[in-house]
Amino acid sequence: MRLIDIYKRFVQMGKEHDPRTIEGVNKILARLNKEYEGLKEKDKKYFDVERLTNPFGDTRILNGDINTEVKKVLVGIDMEAQEILLADRLREKGKKIDLIISHHPEGKALVGLHRVMSLQEGALEAMGVPINVAEGIMASRISEVRRGLMPLNHNRSVDAARILDFPFMCVHTPADNMVNDYLFKMLADKKPEIVGDVMEALMEIPEYQEAQKIDAGPKVILGKESNRAGKIFVDMTGGTSGSEDSYAKLAIAGVGTIISMHMGEKHRKEAEKNHINVIIAGHMASDSLGVNQVLDVLEKEGIEIIPCSGLIRVSRNDS
Image (tube, rainbow, N blue to C red):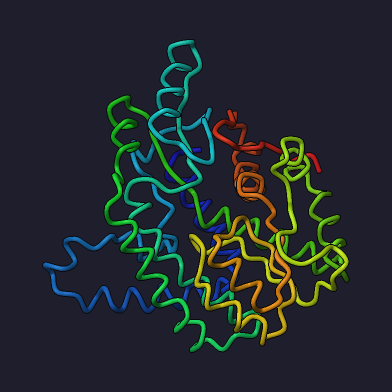
């Protein structure tokens, strides 16, 4: 596969598994295209035209010829300068790396991380929170994240890839959409009654089994396993943590349990105030579950995958 074909396929998978539905995503893109046409030429000069077809600002080709033929990839959750040096060391030892893939965004994709957070508005609406309330809750948090990203050294790893001549890309929200959808469908099928049932269901998944071996698997951080689960909110996508103000609204909407990759202390306290059970499934394991599903597409095309940097590689092509 060519690099551009890999990129387009990942974006399409993200759209197909987006909690807003592919129709909803296409409407958002249509509105953005209309806004773009109305811009002055001086503003169009600096507009990222990838946004017109790719709704995931945290997923981009960061370096390299888009027509590069890819036969071997080095993939990890965080691919920074040290991992790019690892790729160069592998090349010195005779392993040709055609592409480096990071899950977490780097470069311009890191700059654009805040743009995908509007996805959380659709996810909240799907759980019963009115869309106007969801948009109000998220507005200040999106602005906060945007400001927090401004001082970062965004292009550090991209510069390393450029100097060492490695094609480099990242796939963030499309992979997170995959794990979100996977867990939502699994739990809808199993219909767990108590929190302990949810834990048992998660522990049937190989990525969580592997993480548990180093004590990094799923943990109940609020509530008890004997508590009734109620309506379950799978909170695994949308760029980064949302607003702590969402928990009161989710509780009113009937949510009894949240499953998340991670949760900050401010968010945990708000969930506790609203008597919501919280399961932290584990960051690297949950990211791996999503990334593995997009990597399976490459594996089917005969591309060799070398996992590193926290990626727990599990193939589902034989299942």
